[in-house]
Image (tube, rainbow, N blue to C red; front, side):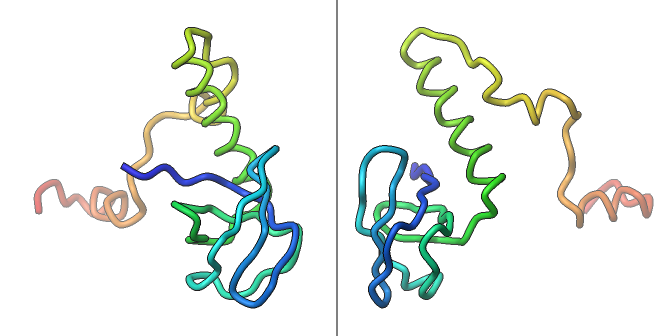
Length: 106
């Protein structure tokens, strides 16, 4: 399994970027996103940027990952999943539309 890590770009050289995951600097391949501006948040997997993230989404992911790390070290989740606790489960849009149309089987 691969976990996406949000990183913020600090410098770009063509299809390569230097980005921070908080404290460490990484070289990131931008082949899937194209060049981006410094300050941009990216969702990265194994040294490659998969998508550009809005800043608020990057912070939600970072908070969730920090909560999971804390839990694995014997601590608590804190508010790592606060955005999920305030709402119930949601279906993807296409499944919700089918349910709204009365479709209950495939």
